[in-house]
Amino acid sequence: MSVAGEAAEGAFKVNSLGNLENADAGSGRLQWDAPRSIWNMSFIAGALILGPIFFSWGGVLVFLLLSGFTLCVGHSVGFHRRLIHHSFDCPKWLERVMIYVGVLVGMGGPLWTVGLHDIRDWAQRQSNCHWFLRHGKSAIADGFYYLNFKLLFDKPPRFDAGPGISDDPFYRFLQRTWMLHQVPVALILFWLGGWSWVVWGVIVRVAVCFTMHWYIAHVAHRRGHQDWFVEDAAVQGYNIAWLAIPTMGESWHCNHHAFPASARHGLYPRQADPGFRFIQLLEWVGLAWDVRVPQNLPPRSALTPLSDRALSLAAPGQEALSREWAQAHRPNP
Image (cartoon, rainbow, N blue to C red; front, side, top):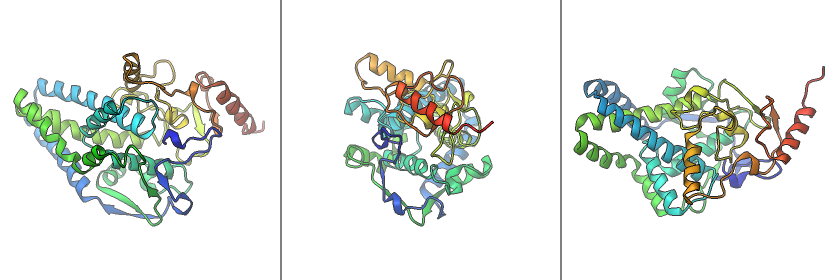
């Protein structure tokens, strides 16, 4: 949820969506999303067929380095923590660089990404959330539908990414051309290392990255560890420790549901969060400021602490609200 949509009283709305009073999160139909489906299935097939043929340790190293760089700088920090949640401030030129790196991940353009995130966030707060966004089916079924179809609501919310995003000519350009930006990467890799680097640095990388993006959304909304229970959300988030490194800290999803405007997702000791470490690096060199963390966010009600450490990093007002809420909702002995 965008930070502009978070009220100090704890009420939430999704900043890019309107007409929510008339929207219905439970009624809609699936439609084959031809461009994304062909893109996704082509890259998966290419990775499975060409990856073994053009295997080399150099190609694997390129795959790991480019995946880590684009997922951390582009997707986790640029797309998610900056563009969607505005969890820190930075120069506009740096924001645009990070968003371009996010496009290189190969999942979609910036406007599509904001819309997908905010519509899913809104729907998962509704008791009648459609199964497509609830991630309630088996992994195989959920992945098949997610990678090939889109949900058309009967009564959709109105989407507008807002000033600085929807009216940014560069972001509109990236939205129109996001698929084409793998071409210069492929040309550079071919010049440096031949076909092995192209296959592993583009085809395998893109296939793994968008598949992992779906998978973390699937598992982190089903079961796992929780420190907080979000009372006003029908679909809960869970912390998935073993995915923290490959997702750059995005798998601490219970923490993120509890404090969506926080730039830090790994809130507790031994919760690795490479995305937040990169933001700290930017802050250290003077390229990021006003970094939001639970200690400096407005207090929020409707959060029930589920562990002793849950309140350790919250602001004093947040701690008081949460303890009061927990006391009121504690079962009778």
